[in-house]
Amino acid sequence: MKKLSSLMTKTTLVAASIMVVTGCSAVAKPQMDHSRSANAPVLKANALDNALLYSDECITEREVVTAQKMWGDGIVRIGAVFSNKGDYSGEAADFIQAMYGYDLSSVLFKPTLAANDQFRSSFDAALSYFVGGNDAYEEDKGFAIKPYTNVKFDNVGIINNSCRMAVAMGNYFFTDTKGGETKVEYTFAYVKDSDGDLRIVAHQSSLPYNPNGN
Image 1 (spheres, rainbow, N blue to C red):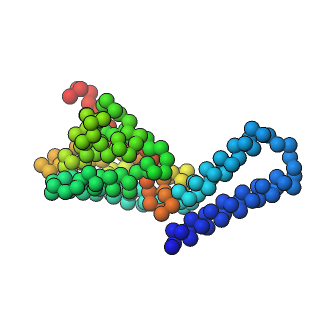
Image 2 (cartoon, rainbow, N blue to C red):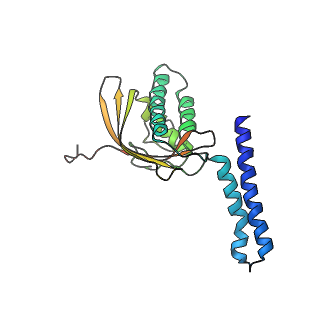
Image 3 (cartoon, rainbow, N blue to C red):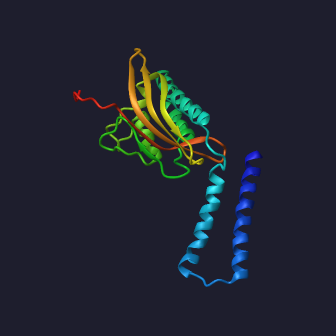
């Protein structure tokens, strides 16, 4: 009910703003730019869609750190389900649905261990990277089913001065079942959905530069 009330409030506000613009136009009767007026319904529809999909609250650094912990815990959980011979593919699908914004907008995802298909712009492509098993992406071995026992983020910085999007950059460290640790560089961009949850819309990660080429 709370979410429905929020959506109705946002819809009412957007509709009210549209009525105000329409009313002003009717009174002033300005000379119409037909090319622009033809696009007006599309722009208004896009504004309404955005109001329904995204929160109007700014993103805080604390929320980014919380989202990072959720991401790391999700990677560990997928690996644990795999080790216990459970439905790890389903677990990974739920993880992507919760953490990434494929249902909100385009997602720019360039994972660490991808050479042939470097960019994963669809849900299925992201799922393949995390758990493998998709013939369209033969290079994927399943990053999340290595498995890992811990993921630790170390932010160099978080930028959230644009309010509606936050960007974090730094290193994260993946601990495997033998205690080995791998350092990876990352950049994540987050938006906040209408439920108040942060969703990743850009994710780039890579192994640190090795001057010896090994």
